[in-house]
Image (cartoon, rainbow, N blue to C red):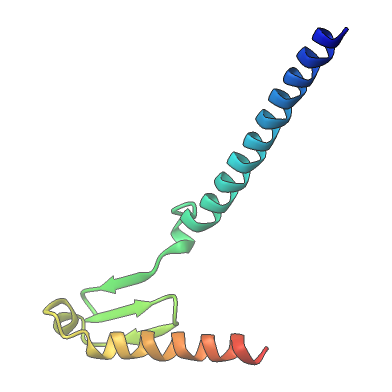
Length: 96
């Protein structure tokens, strides 16, 4: 009877371990999916409009009319807008 009890405990321990591993894997997969996104058109970050010399950054809802300069490496305006928006979001998160 002691052998049966030991065997049953080993089986139970293995099942609980498998269940816990499955839960952790599921949680990691769920978290990964929220970070990756679907790649849909609605998830675009920026639109480059060459005929109108315009870049639209959809994350911060800002339009820049200097596409050529930005593509040549003059990113100061774009980076400043991104930084300002991020700081505003962080401040808002702290205050709420």
